[in-house]
Length: 259
Image 1 (cartoon, one colour):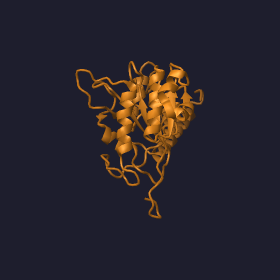
Image 2 (cartoon, rainbow, N blue to C red; image 1 turned 180 degrees about the vertical axis):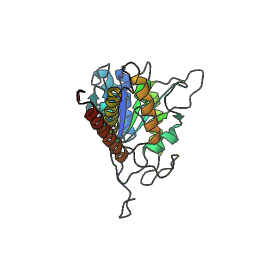
Image 3 (cartoon, one colour; image 1 turned 135 degrees about the horizontal axis):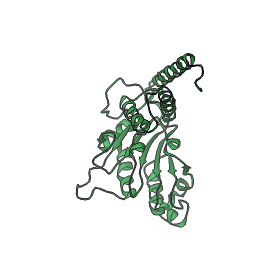
Image 4 (spheres, rainbow, N blue to C red; image 1 turned 90 degrees about the vertical axis):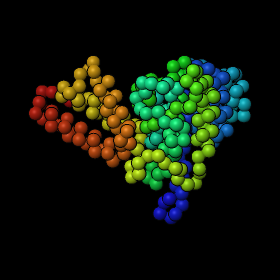
């Protein structure tokens, strides 16, 4: 609650589809967004006509949600303004973050904040191969549905129906039950974290701590560490300041080094 005793306003809830290939799926998800009070639909490089007849057929009365969907060229761009992100995974091994059941992941997603009302997002992967490890590492939590081991893969729209129904059932107007440690600061926006990581990677390449052929894998480990730490905006600013000062010091000692 804020200083006047009222509940902070609900942040915008966003659904993100990464490279959806089926117009029927896109239309169905648009309808689900309308059913479960999702505020915005974002699409990453759709591989189908998301405004075509098939998509509209499945959207039914949610045409406005479909027509208002924003198309992005990258997942990072779609999540830039988001403070909390949950990604979905149908895999059961090899994920870069622990898999959580829907209630735990989604309760974390909608934890109220008095200081940050940026959007929160649920990300769904491609129909044929889901999300890559790099894409999963752009989320703060990974969600997995409890399907049978013999055939764990769900249709995109079916998975969205289950997840969005679970999200819709969480209490409104009061803090949901949380499974996260108490006292953690509010996570920073994705664009701030990505900017800081880009600065750090450039510096570490300059000073020889990273090499170009291994930097991607090593920075993925750093991203994993920071995601688990739930790094705040103030902490991101601190690290960026350290990186800039270290770059200045390095270049002062090596005046011939290219900035």
